Image 1 (cartoon, rainbow, N blue to C red):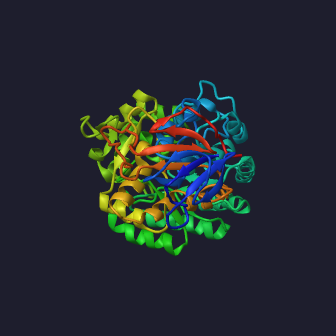
Image 2: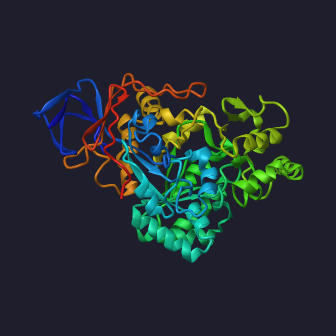
Image 3: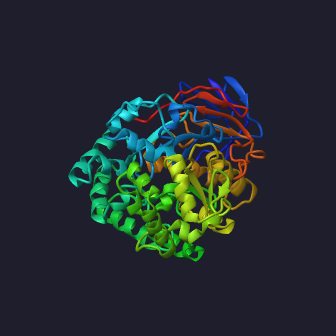
Length: 485
């Protein structure tokens, strides 16, 4: 038996206490004043359940790095994949899907061998952390060519294959074209499985209140629980209070990455009509002078219901590969279109939209949970490396924005409960031995927008199902987990 001796134990659902914690056979076997075994000296350290990332773009990265190094090095031992309605499967046109997902998920293996959602899950390699799949509405819509009855069948198959949530991406293709009635039909299937709805709502700008109201309606009509992805307001911070009140009154939860900037595919700056028909059709439009003028007019004047991020935030707040669109010079729309052509739609962007006070207001709300929304790449958003240490280490341990045990609960037990994962999220006898041992005095985010690939200090060790995957801030290479089935 491996025994952690002398740690401050944060159980995930209550106040911390000092005790020995013994693990054996991948489970927590004993908790008490004196547990015997092979001792890990944990005096002066924090022992927490493994953290749960409720919004992870890790659907294809395991084929390149099965350890998922930036995530495991901050303590995430469970990740929810296929958010925003986007996923590598089910799929018919593999190359078109790969091109569309590249900026968010990477390429994956050289050859995609799967068609169905279950086949994709079977193809995933063993990983250091557990991957929890979502049923992806957008991918299913494309696969079924918007046939609602067929879509309901595919959603059911995804849940039978292991999905724990139903994700929507109502700003991405093809989810942007879905009407409310279609969402309700899909959500009723989720309700049959007791699974929550996890939407990227239609509009996170001036229309965010109405966009969230739509999903509250879908939740109420279907009977499925609502959990809003990366709650924020891109346009007007005065909308935050009514937004939070709306979510609270509906009894919904939400996740947040604790930063005032987001990251997504650069093609998201285009109006929906410019992206319709897939990657090749989008690139053809980007080459057309007439279509370029039409896109520029849409950005300048807006379109009904469209979340016009470039027009709302301005080119000085949109960053690609470390430089803003404004710094690149020339007409901003022309610059964006040129970058999309150069990268064949593969460019991600970082968009700055909120100040620190707004971020902290959302983080302090009792219905907040944590999702990194981490996107892998050459110059990623720092949230890929810094979400958990920023929330727990900076906001809780250092600044006292929320109590430390409350921050741990949101990263662990409450997130596990949302997913229906009864075997983890708490330090209790019989639970899975997913554990994070931290030096609270050193645990804080060090990743920045200028230097984003910096893992936090203070991670003494991480164990998944009782196996060490991190020791003294370094990965061991062990991959004891995989996709949850």
